[in-house]
Image 1 (cartoon, rainbow, N blue to C red):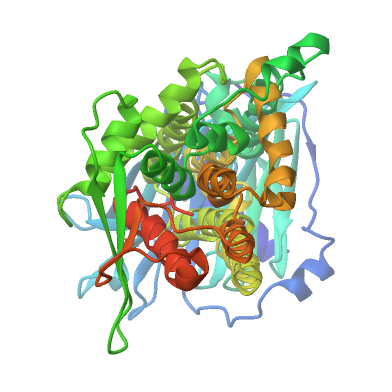
Image 2: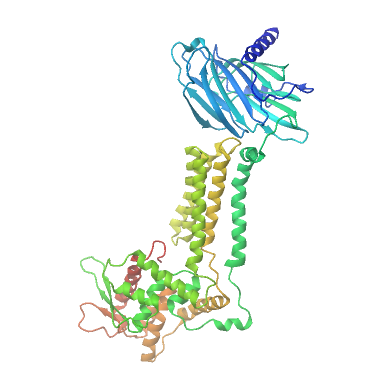
Length: 599
């Protein structure tokens, strides 16, 4: 141990010649010194990677606790010939890494150019070596911000002298920490370690430190020995970022849940309020009140209702030579007197193919939504309500991506957060909306796989110091945005009148499904045309047509089959073509509707 003690005193004298770091604390108070090992000495050695120690490699480090709570570090590295220049700084638990410099002692010239890249809880500083610098040590200096963790009776400082990210071992390491210490402990897996009091601090000597083995000094200092300054930055770096990563989504979910309960849940009619339901409504309005959405079935029902009233005429052209049939929609009389949304729909259906785009269809949808709100069925226009929450979710998602970028999140962490979490969310949402059992199963399985992939990518960076607190806040904002997208579809709120009408509309479905065509010919044809739009809305149009064909209903005057000299007398003669024309009408409407609104 005499050799170790001599080496300690020699290191103290060598580093003292470099001059004291600015802002050193006052003389030490009474100290209690002890030596320990992470995980219990032998266990730590067994767990550490047994990489051969690099012969001739030495590290002499001097750290000083500054008055503002930062830790100024200067490391002298002696590296054998042929070993690339590099040193890993343990940044876990610190607020910042700044003032990094790399120089060659004993040689004139400016600072050496270097690169720094983040690893899990470490920053790897690398530089290029020049021929002939083997005889000179390298001077690597840096400052770690917000080094103190506040305690009840004393503050705690943990200095990672050698990071576990260090890829080369050292034959010996000497470290001097200058601060007013109360108690000091060594954490690490070196073969031999000595801890001695030194002027204004402690000195540590470690022999034969393999690569990948951490070496840390943990000291408690008197409260008030340093003024840590704005403590929120330290809190955000060590704890706050991880808390916000989970707290932000929880707060967003609770806030949206409260908003849904107060502004999204439909009121239940009471007593005489039920009589407001069951009024005569246009089929597209009734369909929208029933499910809060305007889709292609609702607009197809509106077109059939306009055809019944003599505004439109449908002409079906059977397919030939294996080609599918086609449908043409022509005006029968001027559209004056129609409601604005019906007039816009009629103009789109009768316009030449390709003349109307999704933008025109979106205006029709907005007009139908506005009509339902104007008639008092919704507290607010459903499309505007959904867009409000969708825009808010998009804004949060954009802010999340900016935080991930500003926080210098590694590419692997970024991909894990975006692709590994956003992708399964939207896949699961799509699976719930899908009508195909196989598609639901495939999307659900894909969501689970994507989520597992995301967890694998992100997991190494979640720990303290793995990524910046700003990047963790970005993940929290990203999760929060998903709740806005999920709640957007449920937020439109019906009024009492709307709730009563929804119940009446859904109740009328049973009447459509159980309706028996009357024997009177004139009434039978009228009931067929009147109920057909609602059969389209309720997805029972084929059964509706079949029942009236069996009852001997006639083909409506507004439906023609191209090539016939005169219209068919009985609906049963053109049953297949008539149902096919209804499919073509729905498809024609979907062509000019925005994506995701068909059905």
